[in-house]
Image (tube, rainbow, N blue to C red; front, side, top):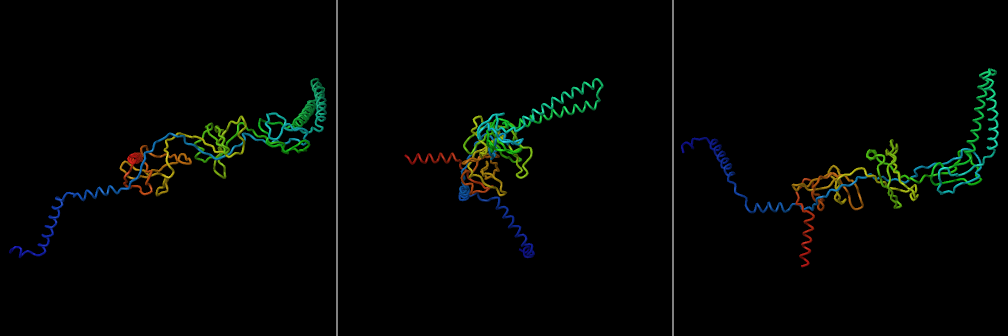
Length: 374
């Protein structure tokens, strides 16, 4: 007692604090076991996890396609023009009729071309005789080289004159350059045409083309000879192959022209019809889903919500491969991913959920219905 009486108050206070700390540390080693109430709280916490319905997607191998909106065009089209002036004296084909290569479309009056030809031929004979005489004299050294060259020149001129008139006579007949259809013929018998006037418009119908434009990325996936399918707005469908891919982009649209050649032996496909062109480019693994399951991430990335093996919500970016009126085909998912089909709007990425498989829900519904019937 005398010792405590003589001890300073500050030392007593320090000893008291140390004693309290030691007691607190010792008490932690003997923490009471969790009560039943604590266990019940943990169970309740698990029970309040958001339930979501999930489904494991089945992978399919599908052909990815490039779809092009375009139209049909003739494989070839040519506008025939008069090469000389004259009056139309004969029409060989009706507007809209099928024609073959070499068929007469129209004939023009030759006027005095035949007389000019006969005169030119007579002059040619004379020039041939003059040349022969000059050549004989030259061999006998009775005529100079210059005189022989002059005779040679006049003979060549006479031959050219005959050829010119023969060409003019042949130009009085307008013929079809290839098989096709006479799409337009703005002349009639008696029409006087000048050189350069339009006489007819001919289109080749077999084959016919389905044409459209593709982007820079799509062009890199196409190869000459690739097969494609053309669906016309009329309901007609035709197979074909790519015969042309532009090597230079259109300056206005930065797209490339593509031509799909279609066989048309019966001439049922016509030019100028709106057409959808589908060209398969590769086989990929894809999954079929409802468009309603798609969502956007915080960075506006297109994807779908799913549940990982730890029942944590994850956002999976995807790419749309093909779209129909009812479904979407997507790629980019890993095999075995469980996607959220019901409840995706109520959960966030990183949240733990309670997933329920769709087939389990279906089985429970069947069992319930069976019990009700009894």
